[in-house]
Image (cartoon, rainbow, N blue to C red; front, top):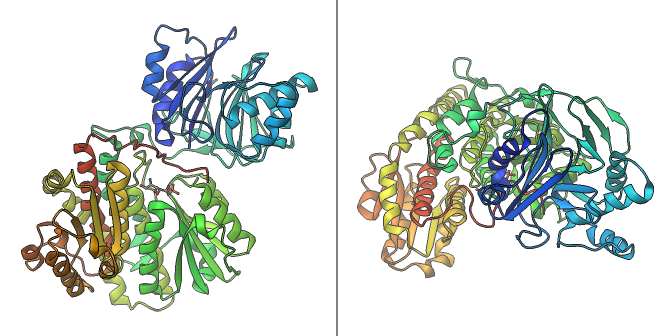
Length: 612
Ligand code: M6R
């Protein structure tokens, strides 16, 4: 959480920083701030609210300077207000700092600084760090870089930070531990950011800082070191997306754009990996770990939120097609419950951002137990993608809307490919069935495209239920996690209470909630569990619940029972299950818009949760 941007070069820093912050607002939007250095002064402006509030606040103020940094905050320590907003300035004004992460031992450090007569303006852990750096600088009589380095050696916790020093105005010092930081290499200019989107329009050359690394950046050089002072030769990488991929491209919101991008994103996910003619799936990123996967005692899938839901679909697909036992765990629970792990287990960690703190910690635990860890990430070069033994990128393109949409469908696509690959290698799937499954997989983009054409119908249904206070989402088998995901989408962007449930479990409790005001979304496509779900629909009907059914095209049975039907194209296997999420995404989107909610930046949330 929190987005960081820094710039040093020949251009005016302010517009680069502000535009960069707007691209990082998905990481937090409780407050925003900038520090712009014109080599005489470092002007700091900060404001509660969004980057646009900050922009309004800086109108008419001195924003000149070619060195600068900015921050958009998701509050951890201290309420969202102007004082707790970043940047934070040290007590004697020598250092200005922006920070993403949590300094876990801040209370101990603060106590020591208070004993040395330091006073604090904010409630943040970051101000403590600014003062610690300053204290070391002033009393240790060292340069700014050394002060930052020594301070970071005393810190326990996560940080992605940028520091300015008034005595050394022509440089930026940045460092990272568990919170992402990328340095963009331009011509006589450098950029720093939490991800590459703020600077990809200026340069595609970037260095992803490693944990406990620090960089000193001047207009013409970057020096990377560990916080123990060992110099590092950084690996300059090429960024593989364009700046317009991170724009709204004519859509009202990022979320809508990302829903509509799904056919294209899934095509990218399967591109170069599924070969229909050869009847083969090739996942280069898994080649080295295939023996481990094929001999796995069990597979444990970990993730949070939407990624966890994708994992549940993965469990269904891997067990169905590869017959390997799978368990799916919330990373946040897994990491703290002393799980039994051996080197015969394979852990698959799923994360769009690749930065989720709980998932990262769970990976470290699995690695310590010598389990093989595979990542399914979207963000290239992210912490999780680098921490894992092997992996498969989803290649969904930047997902900016806080509510995950294309991340989910592409994660499920990767899991489907893994399930089929393993199934074939373990001789669990015959050639003909395999071919049918590959054909189905390849048809998903087109089927989603087709489903999107019914958006107007979904909008009509949304109009009828936008004022409902509760929703129930039901599904069986691999549609149960789709129901969970549909419910999550609705609650996070429209603030309506929604629950996802396995359809057959309804009669063990939730059925008590059903009355003539309760909309119940049922995923009821024509496959394995069809007859059972028809019975469940009857049970809801008998209690006068309002049924919104997701059905296969041409279904005449459910259309007679349900209040509304939303059709998806027919498919023959569980591989097609991904398609059913599309009407649910659209339903939550339209309801949220009709309720006047900001779908891209829902309250209290942030896109990547880099704190526990
Ligand atoms: O980046 P990750 O996939 O690790 O993020 C996990 C969750 O925080 C994320 O899926 C969250 O639940 C989304 N906001 C859901 O839309």
